[in-house]
Length: 176
Image (cartoon, rainbow, N blue to C red; front, top):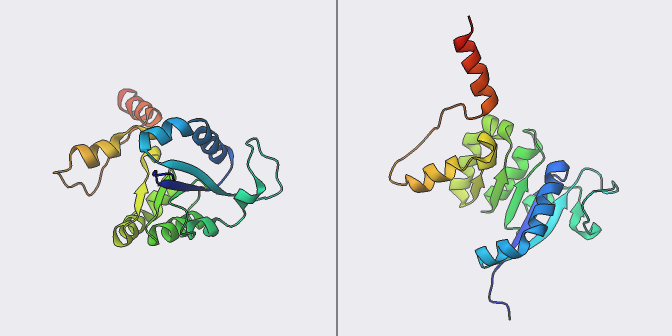
């Protein structure tokens, strides 16, 4: 009998980024499982076109064209929102958080347009929303603030944390 828990992962969006995430998780599975003390299962992926050829090998039985089927599936522990946009991505994110799941997203537009609603839903239902990859290309800033400065209460973080914006602002300041 396996004493390690199982973590089922579902990807909503299976374009270039989604396939890259899938491939990385497959490649790093043993290392991640050893670190987590849990078995990782790449359970499902939501795609636009079920018949499309993909660069990543994936069983047809793991594909769906309905991302809400992943978001609402009680067997999926972690939902990776990789679709982009703010419409369906919002619905998927809120549905998963409403059942207490973990959602991971790098979707800046989604966070900007619906961040307050997303965080409130996560709090209300015991879900978790991880969005570090949307901030400064994944610099581990949010986790450091949330966990390293746990005695402090942050309600907002303001800043420009990417090289392009810093370059533009420097040029605006220095050039007349």
